[in-house]
Image 1: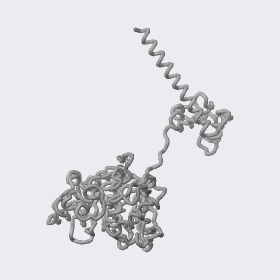
Image 2: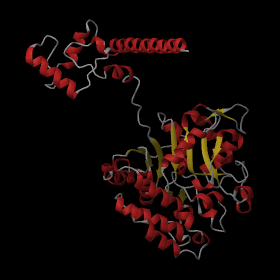
Image 3: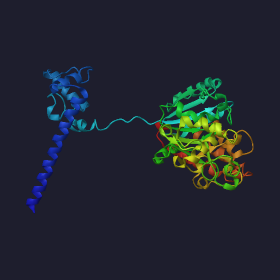
Image 4: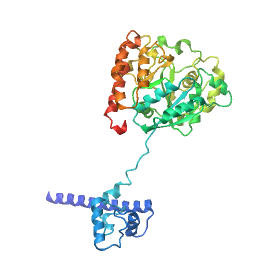
Length: 440
C-alpha cells in the first residue's frame, strides 16, 4: 500500500513540475510576442523600469547600497514581473508572485462594456414626453445607454440642452438625427399615420453600424431596467429578428381581428410601440411577401408594401409591420403584455395576466392618456416620473405620494388595479437602492 502511495505522490509531483515548466514557457512566449522585446531578460527589465523614480532608473548594472535599497523597495511595494519565470529575473528584482502574474495576466482580458441602444422618434409637441421616457430609462438601467434620437430640426437644440445638463450622470451617450425618408415618396412616408411615426421602419437602414436596437414610442415609461428587455435578445432563436407584444390579449375587443382589411400577425396583431430588433438579421433577411414570388430584403419591401396597402391601412407603419410578420411569422419573438402595457389592458377590465402577477414592466400611455383625465392612473405615473430628479432622495421618496394619487383613481377600471402600476416600480427602486452608489 505504501508503495502505491509513493507512486501516486511521485506522479503528482512530476505533474506539478511539468505544469510549472509549461506555464513558464507560455509566459516567455507571451512576453516575446506582446512586447517585441528580444535578447536578454535583463534588457527587458531595464527598458520597462526606466522612467519614474519608484524602482526606476536602477538598472541591472547598479551596485552597492543604492541597488540594495532599490531591491528592498521593489520587494515591499511591488509585485514585479516581466513576463518571465521568477528564476530568469535580474538579481536585483523581486520575483515574488511573478509566476502567477505571468501566467494569468494575459488570460484576463478586459471586455468592452456593452451599451444598450435605445431609439425614439419625436415630432411636434413630444419633447417633454420624450425627455420623461429617457429619464425613466436612466433612473433604473444598469448598463450604459446609447440614445438615438430622431427629431424635427426645431427640437434639436432643446434636446441638446436638456441632455447636456444630465452629463454628470456619465451613464449615457446620445446622438441626434434629422427626420429622413427615402427621397422617393418622402412626403407620403412622413404623413403616414402620425407625423414621423414611420421613421422607425428605416432605422435598420440608417443605423447601419448598430447591431441591435430597442425602439420605443415617446409615450413609453420604463418601470424596470432597460437591461431586462434587452436581455430578451438572447432568447431569440436562429430565425427571429424582432420582438413585439400582442396588440390585444382579448379577441373580443381586438381591433385587427374585427376591422383590419389587410393581413396581420397572429390572432390579434402586434403593437409596435415597443420593438426590440436584431438589425443585423433584419438587414440580411429575405422576406416572403404577397407581391412577388421573389423574397425581398428590408430595404426593398417597404415601398411596394405601402403602394399595395396604403388605402387599406389605418395604423400606418404598425400595419406594415403586421403584414410583414404575417408572411414571416417565424421571424417574430412575441413577449408578454407587461412589456407594453396600454389602457386597452385595463380600460374594460383587467386582461393582462402577467401584469397582474408580476406588475407592469413598461407602461405605454397611448391615446394621450398622460395628458388628459380619461385614465388618471396612467397620468399619475407619468407626472411622478416627470417631476422626479436624479437625486437618490427624490427617487426613493416618490412611491408614497404616488400611491396616494393612485388611490384616488379607483373609480376607473385601471385605477381599481392600481397596485400593479407600482408593484414592479417598488422593486426597481429597491434594487437601485441596493446597488453601490457608483452603479446607480
